[in-house]
Image (tube, rainbow, N blue to C red):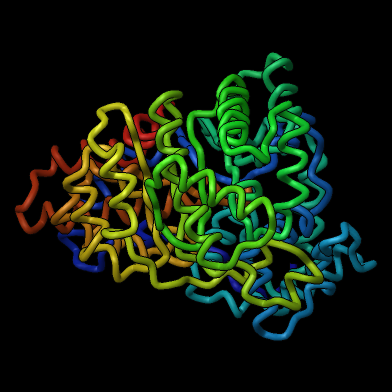
Length: 474
């Protein structure tokens, strides 16, 4: 390595309070949870990795290309996505040497200072690959070679890493048209690792989704239902949900622009659906249709037991030119102001008091924590709060989440942590950050004599392990 490279060190007290009394308590609490199994109940890793168990190609393909947290920062500083080898919407990609793409990343790694991405990456480099000098332009090739060579060995195959990371269960997310062949292959392989799916029907629920027309047609072909008839459309969803559940799914997920729900009389719902499938609808019709389908999905969850998640409040694919060239999920999602109290009332009036219904809410609008989400979850038996998500999956975001929801929702109306990531190797790092922050929060409460330390230790373990399992019925 470059003799001028700086050492890469993970301080044992990272993210713990600077106050010595609280820091000492946080250390003790963390010792209870540091090595608990990882429960990853919601995320976007590729099930093909675990089905085929093939070696990852190289450092770039594993750590750079799938991680929009990383390449969105580089793009914001003028680095073209083609220079990083990011696939385009049509499946093609620029002819870029992956080593050269890694060198671009290394020359710009200073851009990540102080961000959660920097913490996650340093954890991966240090703990997974044993690197002890910082990544920079001078160490780029050594990093690339060390990581790429390690990935060709049996201990770095996907299943081996799954077991090494102490993952007890991981959930992927698939669309309504997916045949779940990779999940079937995992199940039939005899491997003991638990990988389950989750049903995300957005392409056949959102009329403004660019794939809606073709996806709806394919939805009908797969299910054999007349999906241009309202009742047939709902039967098709029930059929696909049952298939996903048979393949291990315990949850659904809905990524709508808002959290609007509706409970229309049947005749109005049919009339609205007819308007949607005719193509003669406007933005208000599309919003009302999404709202009605959320309530229909809640009813189905009551019947089949799948936990319902809503990830609203995101202006997805804000960069039109980037979307047209590279497609979805390229780091151009931007938070929106989101309202929950009135938006959820139709659904909650219909199903909110049902003892077996479970709804997990997420937000990108932090202003709603204390005003809306905490009070809602602190009242409705069906409601639980998902952890700080996307832009707020950071130490600061986790602190704000706890501080603003604790007084009304407590700890036990939240679901612990989920990593919600495509970046497989970052999963242990993300869970470690969440455990450290929760221990820091609990240490402050214990130091202020608001909670006894034995209670704090129990809460820390519940947040890290028991609550996500229970919340997602795993």
